[in-house]
Image: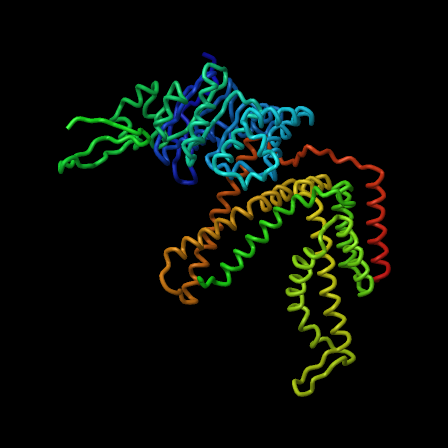
Length: 270
Length: 272
């Protein structure tokens, strides 16, 4: 399978605090990948490195065979081409919504790409319709609900029809209905050429959004596999702090067992 | 009813003011005479008048520009009542405090004396104080009319097309968008603190809490600005403000620009 990202032995630190240590991974074209890990495991930092917002202090990252370096990103032609093809949705939509209206917000990316006025208007209207948010187009983004903000943030990157979508905690802080809408959207891209890389610690959505899973701990990949392989490995999930031992009592007998949040029902023997 | 500190009340008041300011975007889309001019003409024209107000030394000339500013507000369909409330009264309050000492310390022909209080107001002192208040009122009126009649993005694009450095334009854009979010955060921090406070804090405790809140807010604002900048970069931002609306000068823009420049020059000549 053609390569989208090749990450070779990269490291990155926030001042003196290491966030990524010797991380290596390969992501192919059309892959639907989940990056699983507890808070502080390096998921968000890795997504920012893949979006060429941060650059590793050592190691290399390539996108479709081209090196992602600071120097390369300073070249306008390469930068605009890369930004159109790779899009990142930030975990906090307030960070991403900085325009006066929803329409302006979605038009922001195409305008940076210097598309013609007609193309911008046409694409923005198509995206508004696709995301079912046409009724919000004249509203200021800061007055929207959390779910609406997330949809607008997604629309603001989908308008460019990117080949690679990097999603950082796309369902965090959303109500169940908004969560399922976002998951449905990711599921629609299954089997297409679009590569989707989702960072999350919500195990209950992994099987729906990914075909491959990388588990991160302390800035490095500690396991890779299919969702069923990873989710059935209780020891691995406990080690990565993705599940925890849950203590409770039945008829006066107190016991504990690994506990996965998000599942509505579980059964075990006594 | 809870007693709020001066700072909390100020921040709550500021939240309302900023909220109103952000709502005023819709005023920019009103079909007023000023709104029909190219935003660059509006920015250059209003700035010319502001500069002429600063240069003018005669009361009569500044008063004439104030009348012009009121006429422009009328033409831009900006409510005079809102101007009076938002600008004139507020500016009067602030500048009067600054201008007050000039009444008494400027030497000259006495206008009013109160021997019992050893106070004397001179004609020159009165003139200096009125000049200061009128100058600030006029400049504030002009800039408020510009802000109310032009959307913020248009102002930024106009400033950029007038070769203001991209870094400054970006800074202004960020400040405008996120001041509301930061004030909301400050409000929530005060509310959260109030919900965990029993009894009344002493003045010194209140000052310490306020200082701590300010520090946390500063850290949050730095973090937020870095995140927003990354989000902009991620969508292709390279330092230029790009809008759907193209700025093209029409004959009426040239007429408007000439009128602004002529008025500014005339005022400077009259007020020299």
